[in-house]
Length: 441
Ligand SMILES: [Zn+2]
Image 1 (cartoon, rainbow, N blue to C red):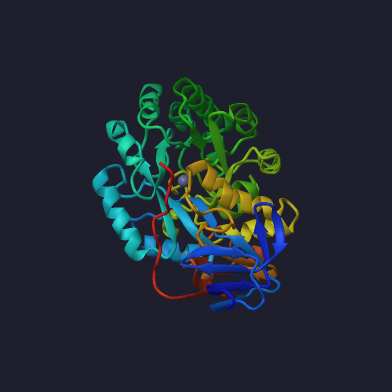
Image 2 (image 1 turned 60 degrees about the horizontal axis):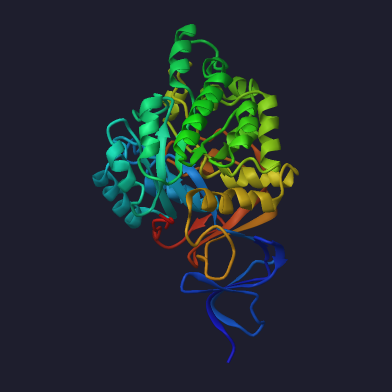
């Protein structure tokens, strides 16, 4: 009797950790049972992936789903639906909601909510504050918690730990890798009076200049070495930091955002105005070139969207009244596939940045590679499919994307989570079945 599976993915090109191979994948009980399946094998469901690449389920390790918060902008149900439409099987969600996720009670609320309403799997960051430091060692071990997030410089929300004394205390509480928003708050505040309402949108990158980011990262690296506490520098935006961080591989990993790889100043501020304003800012061509070099020499560990939507009406305000943050969870994979097709990185490296990278940085258990025994999470992509990003496709209630009108080659055509197809050709299937991602404590 030949083998029987719950799901068989036939005829695709699988992007395996050791290279791409034309091989069939057999799934049983939500996990990858076999790579390489006999022709006679049967299954309850067979997907013909001829002409498609079968990737491990892609992970966006940096989203702000704004829940609890403004339902007219985003929620966990809408943001995770956007994720699966965009070819993601898991997202890691930031804690600077309203209220923020900073204690056991709010974390428990979010854990329950995710398991009822999320369309994809989720990891949860817990926010560190000056007052919850004694609780952080326990909180970082909570179910589904990918790590502690520290805002060392101010952005959206009220979470902040900006001084060395408290940062060191945070680093000495607990032991897992901490994710940082690295901009020096003192320099940000000192430079604020140099600008006024109605100044050009390009002033965003002049206010939050390269030194704000680089100084923040130098301070964090000194403290991380002193305390031997692993750090993950989120959304690195300067050539200086990317060069500097190469000397801190013992203690630090880092992320680059798709926006910093795709959009460039001053063009983004002229064409997008408030819809190009994010923290840290989109900068000039030299920084984008450095980001691509760092993608291709291995400096960068993860790529995220930093999906951080705001109401359209607020983004239309003059600078600096327009809030910083851009919609992005649904467009991350198409934009990255387009970069692959343009020859800026290989598909293997893209998978490394969106699967193995987040798994390694945050200690994900059972996800991040196509291998027997791993969760049966897959993103099926058609590398030849051409499509324009339209705002009508965006399901986040905010309804806008800074990538509107961009012509893309390469598109996610199916999203499969733990063996269940949740998206096929733009159709969302079934009911929300997202679970909390497991992390090695
Ligand atoms: Zn963010």
